[in-house]
Length: 317
Image (cartoon, rainbow, N blue to C red):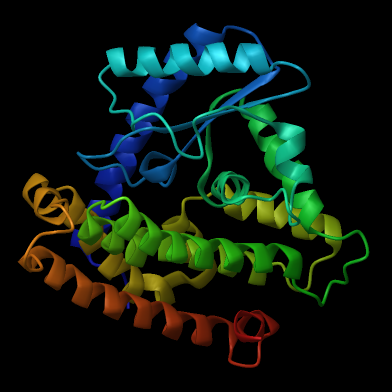
């Protein structure tokens, strides 16, 4: 099955919007920071995934090297202001991306008591969907440095990168648990968060698993290089590269999700407070499609790897 023209047009439209706006953001970042190679600026979210729709905001993050924290704080504050002045929608202050983070801490704190939700979220989003806005070479180096921590020096070619895979699984389960916490404790809109969880977050997780599985049979350095190459691609492009037309059934449904999010009326319906008396029609329709999407990904996983693959086994045991 090949991707329909309608679905291809959806991906082309979101990709074009994302690329156009990323270029504008990079100009603003360059003007704000100048030539400070101690700083790295990236973006996560729909822009990084090349899935920007009319309601997308900018999930900005700043990393710094050595003792450049003061420069990083000033740059982040100024950059947020300048991007808002340029017409971009910025999320509210707070959350895991509120403060800059050192590159060294990002790659050293994996597991243990200090590895809070904030750090695993930043780490995984940088790896699985991150895109640079300032200091491209520094951004790429940070990703490779992080991957080097995950791929053991003595790993064999026939082994998969279990350390990385386990952290991807942990991140996926973390955001599933946090979803319930946020909608119950913070009384945030449930429908749009759940639909995003079942589509964009699930695809992010799945595409990460696919990237790990693709490194089986490669020596250590080749595993790291392959992961760096694949994780630099948007999730839907990664699936197409690895699985070809076998990915089309899932991506067809995903295109429908993106098309729905680009409709202001649909977003408004999904964004009603949790206390709404009944589920919206838009939510019921997308929920049914999300169930099909999950089934399509599971079918793809089995067809692509085979049920006896260590990648598939690792997801269960």
